[in-house]
Length: 362
Image 1 (cartoon, rainbow, N blue to C red):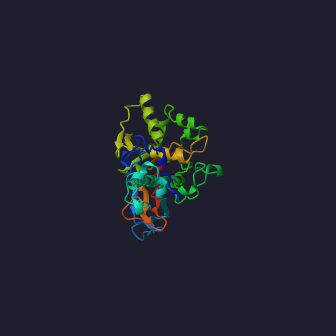
Image 2 (tube, one colour):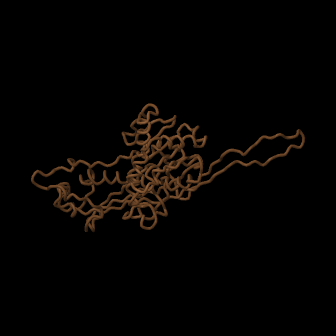
Image 3 (cartoon, helix red, strand yellow):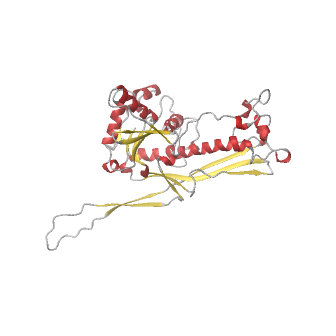
C-alpha cells in the first residue's frame, strides 16, 4: 500500500553518478519563522475549559464627606474571567518501504525480513523526521495565528484560499481572529486603517503601501492612539508583516524623515527588529507567507498588511503538554501490514489577555 505522505524520491538518479548517501541531499530553502514563544507567552499544562481570572482596579474612591455620618460606598473591584478553548493538532502518517524501492533511498533500507521497518533508518532520521518536525512547527504558527473555527473557502464567502482543506484551520480560533474582534474598525483610536489593503488588485495592494508618508503615518497613529497602560509597559512591541516593515524603512529613507532605521537580526535571522519612536518593531515574514498562501482571494490578498501594538504578556498560547511546544512524535513499526507509522498530537489554543490594551493597523 502506498504511503499517505508523498516523498517523491523518484526525481533523483539511481545510477550513473547517483547520490549514494541520503546525507548528501540538500534541503530546499524554506521560509524560517523562528520560535513562536519569542513573541507570545506559552502556557503549558492547560486543559480545555480551564478558567483564567483577573483582578483589576477599584472604581473611583475618595470624595468630600461630612465628619459625622459619612456615606459608605460599596465600590467593587474590576474582574475578568476567560476560558481556554483548545483544539487538536494531529499528525498521522503511514510509510511503506515499497514506495522507496528503485529510488536513492533504497540503499538506506534494512535487509531481508526487516526491510519494511523504516524505524532507525537513515531515511527516517535524515530526511523524513527533520522535515516533518519543521512542518509541525509551521503548523503551530498556522493554528495559533490563522486558526478560525468558522473558516470557509473564498468560493463560499470566506477568506481561506480555494483548494485548501478547512481542517487545517478550523480546530481553534487563532490570534488574528480574536484580535480583529477585539479591535474592530469602529473602535476609534485603537484602530488604524491601512488603505492599501482595500485596493482591488494584488499589485496595488503591495505598491500603495509604499506611497510617501503612508507607512510613517500608520505607525505614528498606531503609537499615539494606543492605550496609555500599554505605552507604559516595558515589553511593548509592534508586531508587523514584512511589507509594513519594508514600507516604513523606505518611507523614512526616501523622504528624509530622519536617520535610516537600524534593523537587528533576531533569533538566528528568523525575524528582525528596530526601534521607531521609542517602540520596538518586530517584522514577521512568516505572517506574509501565511497570508499570501492561506488567504489568497484571487484578485487580492486578505488584509496583506497588518500590525499589532501589544506586548508578549498579552498574547497567550496554551498547550496541553507540560514540556514541549511541539507534539512528541510516536514512530513505530506494525508487523502485520509491514508498515511504519508516525503519530503526534497536541491540544492547543489562544487567549488574548486584556484585549482593551491592544491596538491594530489593518
